[in-house]
Length: 224
Image 1 (cartoon, helix red, strand yellow):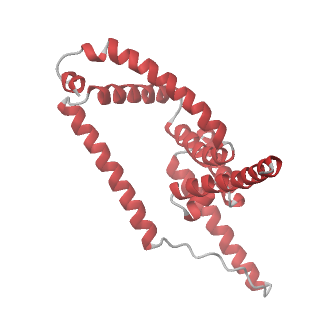
Image 2 (cartoon, one colour; image 1 turned 180 degrees about the horizontal axis):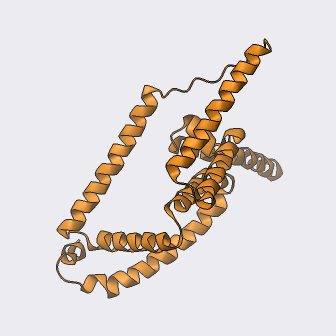
Image 3 (cartoon, one colour; image 1 turned 30 degrees about the horizontal axis):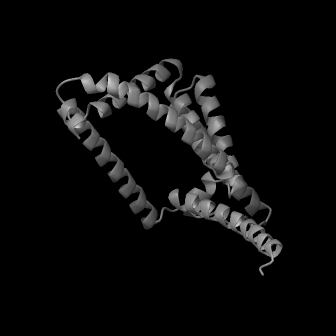
């Protein structure tokens, strides 16, 4: 006879061991999907001092642009001027006191990083051009409708916030959302799945009641 208690205990232990491994696999997949390397570490807050520094610098820069009333070129020039003067005085003060400065990290872009960025930009630009081509030919009304809604939302948002505020919000979202998702990924996936189902249901109703009745370019989609 088989001892059921031992089998159950073994299954419980096995499940307890599999759960952390599954979580580690999800973290690894998320890290790889974001390109891996230092950029993914910064976005996932594995290098907390760098991520926090980006948030602070972006916030200070946004406050300077929005509330100082100074032009962008003037603000950038003043900030760089202050940094150059401080570094120059720091180096001369250390030489005067016969102290050895800590070596600053050498800033250089690797060829691999530049090639990856160029390839990513090329793919996105080609995808955008393909979408524009399909819209101008009238081959995909659904794509046209989504594009119109997206541009209209951007126009509405632009009437309330400036470009720099919009860029600041995008920066904060890009530096915080990946880290929050990596921590609460199971809950986010569950709620996003529910929202996606509701959206698909409403979109299906609109497609059947509105889009399918439009003539011309939609006949091809309807046949498919």
